[in-house]
Length: 127
Image (cartoon, rainbow, N blue to C red; front, side, top):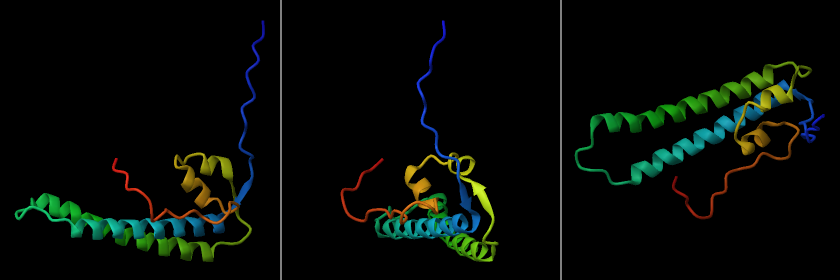
């Protein structure tokens, strides 16, 4: 007795231009830097206890470090993408299949439509 497995849709294997992928990564890093800065601003507007634990303060200062690193990495990836030869490609499936966030996959795929931006309006959902 043979069991027939249902056909599983396969993601088409296609090439991605490496320079365009690097540029999209740079754009995504810039977006994340902006979000990090917004978190930093939001936290600075919160009222903390008069005597905040120094470890907590160091943790909050770490957000500034994350923001600066993301900004630098975004600029670096933009520069790298502009220096790459235009005829270098990578296979899409092994690269993009490692990502979990669907929105990120769409934003990084140079053949996808315009990258999605995070909606600014709507309800706040706490995790």
